[in-house]
Image 1 (cartoon, rainbow, N blue to C red):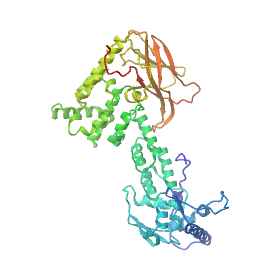
Image 2 (cartoon, rainbow, N blue to C red):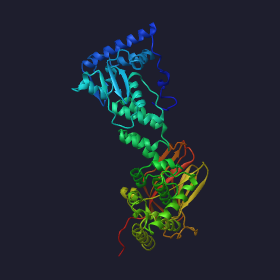
Image 3 (cartoon, rainbow, N blue to C red):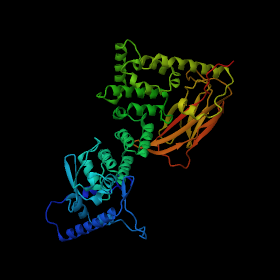
Image 4 (tube, helix red, strand yellow):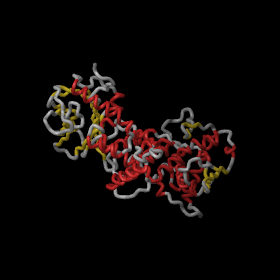
Length: 502
């Protein structure tokens, strides 16, 4: 299975039902051959069917060649007329399936390819000997069209799965335990993930047990949450999913942590006002106006302490506030928004002030060991973008702890340089001769649908830079790189200390 346009066979579109009426001699022969084959398969099933993960597996007779094709495959390959006669017209039917106000005249031998029906027909169930079976639909995602297509898949190799129908068909396939159809739905989801589909695919993968699709969608969201300008996407991200995304150290932050707060503010506004409509450029200003009005009405109570805002506390607790308040403009914005309670901010301000004093007044050079838990939970997330393959650079000057880190891209290499030049950068830089830092660098190129077409990660590394020293951290020479490239980095530049030096 592969690309929608080339590797999924759209057989459904070519199998239009013919009108009821007399059939020709050749078609009669095909149908008779198919029915004879069905009889052989039924005898085999009655001899002792076995199931595995919901799909029927025909027992192999001792000495039978492994290469021998199953009878159903030969019958389907004979002609599309077999599908039309057996499924569409129900010729030779020995059981009627009724559901959702419709009825299908089908064949037990074909239905037993489904684990659901194989269990039903081989056990001590009352449906085992019934000629008409009424199915109850436990899943609201299953509609008549999806059930029809799922049943039809038992009579043909491939079915046409439009992306806008894949979840309904996945639900039907999961209920009927049709492993091959479930796999085909997964392939369609892989090929069509986008801002419009990613959340519905993610939730469906959780519901129907597709961990690979769930992981793919989660990675897509980590790569695109901060870069996509889509109100639809923000509306679709649930509270629990957003909490998991914001907590991840792998979230691709395009610039600095304050951008994560801004994105969360937009998301929160759209969760509270799902009918909002307007140009994207007006979203943030409208959100600010709405929260300012809420602040006045609640008599300056921080929004997350109001009854309406308490549900969103777990999400905002994932923000790495220490890397927001180190910038004056960001700290003022946090204060003016009045979303975050002061009780959250006070200990962060204290810890950052003590960290600044330790950096300036002690001989602590920085982290020595890589504590993975500390890196994942407390590292600074920041990033940039290489728009084209040409020399460029930027500064991450928000450290203010003995660092003014310059990032350079030149000759297909990314280089870190510690600058101590007297340039404006927050509170300025300190001049200890050496500083240590832990970093993890990630590169990603995304296509128009947000799927990664290039990805490269470094290991977590402890590096030591002296004044004006340079270090090559990534070399892209001889690699098939697609521009633009997002550069995301996690930094830990001070050991976590909870006490003052004696």
